[in-house]
Length: 177
Image (cartoon, rainbow, N blue to C red):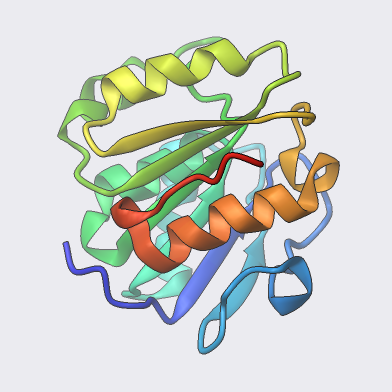
């Protein structure tokens, strides 16, 4: 997959009314990248929601920010439109009922994925499951953060996510993250 800069970053924060607004104020190196926040409806199956969002977003390339099965389905079903995927405190592998179809497809996903948890998040250990299932997954813990890394440690979030968005798999996590 080509690591050229994408023209778009899509943010998915289900269950919240906020629109993700990311940019230079967040410390992210997003010059030349359009950022669009999306809040998918919670009353549809994740795969259908992902397809509808991908259709609305267009062919891409997109860098997706998410935390649930919707973002993963987008990457699995439309990998040609996804340059990279950032999952902040993802829930897809421990929500009931588990989406067995999605879990079965994850080992074939070649999209670079950053799974980011706060060190103080009680679910942080679940990041290892994403690392095992996704062949191009990097799992990172941010010290001093809980389940909402972006709010708890905004500078560290910006550093880690910004570097990943800019470089994909060729990024490095600094010691102060």
